[in-house]
Amino acid sequence: MANEDTGKIDKILNEIVEEIAGNDIVPLVELIKNKSNVSEFKIAEKLNITVNHVRNMLYRLNNYNLVYFTRKKDKKKGWYVYYWTLNMLELRNLSIKLKTDMLNKIKNKLANEESGVYFICPDKHVRANHETAMEYSFRCPECDQHLVNENNVKTRQNMEKLINRLNEEIHLLQAMEIKLVKERKLTRIVKKKKVKKINKLKKKIKMKKKKRK
Ligand SMILES: [Zn+2]
Image (cartoon, rainbow, N blue to C red; front, side, top):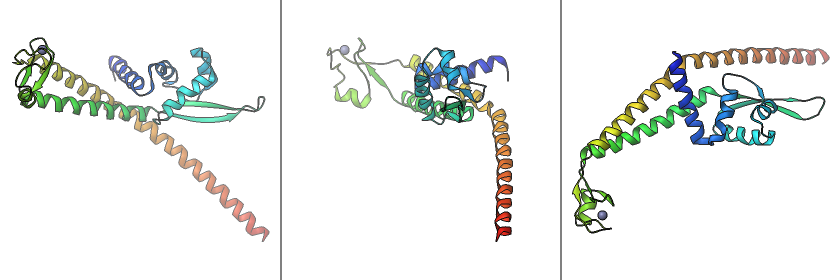
């Protein structure tokens, strides 16, 4: 993937993070992106905020399954330290979903624009479709001027531009897939190995119990 595309994808992902969790989260996401198991103390230090604040931000991301954590007991201090990793696959899927929802909405709006005739007040107080304009008797409810046929070419062009942009963004996000799926497979293999180890241990314990009997 070209550097330019990576930059675009970063921008899209940040936009989504900001939309769902707030714009203060963006620097945190930038910080833990492409890393794994980042200590919350390190995050607090880097962002110059308290650990409680960091946790609050991470819980907001956790509401959308956008972070994983592991914890380790600090033997000296006796408390748990949490280590966080951004769930890129989930962030990507959520972004595709939200962008697709937006795309469908705009497409519907455009279809309305294309099929309907709109009437406006010359001073732009109202904009109404034919049915509503009839209810108003083709007069502006604010200033009583005659409503006129609107030329909606500009509106349609803007919508078409937005549709093209959303399509491009969704396409870029989908192109991230290959790398992410590989990562996921790797995690699965590791997990399977762990399960095998655990099963072996269980068998050993059973054998020992039998011998005792
Ligand atoms: Zn008016």
